[in-house]
Length: 255
Ligand code: BGC
Image 1 (cartoon, rainbow, N blue to C red):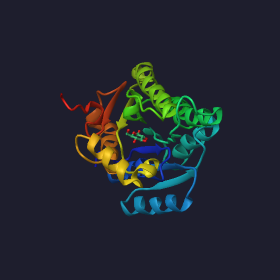
Image 2 (cartoon, rainbow, N blue to C red; image 1 turned 60 degrees about the horizontal axis):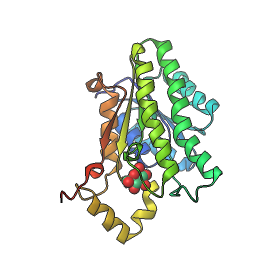
Image 3 (cartoon, rainbow, N blue to C red; image 1 turned 90 degrees about the vertical axis):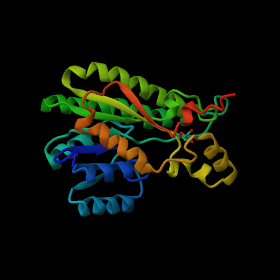
């Protein structure tokens, strides 16, 4: 077990990619604070699954767009488990709106939940890790759309582009403390954020055809990358993003 004795916080941790990350980190031996906003029953279910793996998880209801709530997550990790080693900025939302129809409210929500939370999550986690003096890992779940336009989803692209530069810049700023900051950029993953696509067979066909591997990822296929980046094998990786996208970003018919 790669992460025995480590303590992690996972934001947006009770569904989708977040829930898979919680389980994978627990399989590797970590104890976990699960941040969630809704569906407390999904959190309790996950706590039980983690306990069955021989680790401990506690669910904390927090709004990651609020700095005080992010601090509460880090404080909970320290209070419950004594220290913090891994902070995963995973919480994310999208509006599927264009430059012409995005409202101020939609813009603010996406930027606050996706980017502001990752910025201050990184800041607060890094301060705790620096205080402990043993370095740490901050993992930002971005998207292929940190770099690749998705017309019709522009606030999301902006937020993920911001997370890309957060990863790079904070990675450099925190390197002297051995706090490593890396991004994981998934492509299309079978999670609640993609429900509207998954319910539409024509869209699914189009999507599968566009992906060189021919299918969406399972959340576990992203979580395994996160677990690698949290472990000893990734000790020389910082200020960069690892894409797990089935090749979609480089898809080309080669005409
Ligand atoms: C978005 C999805 C999109 C996928 C591939 C993800 O980051 O959340 O809406 O289908 O990227 O384009």
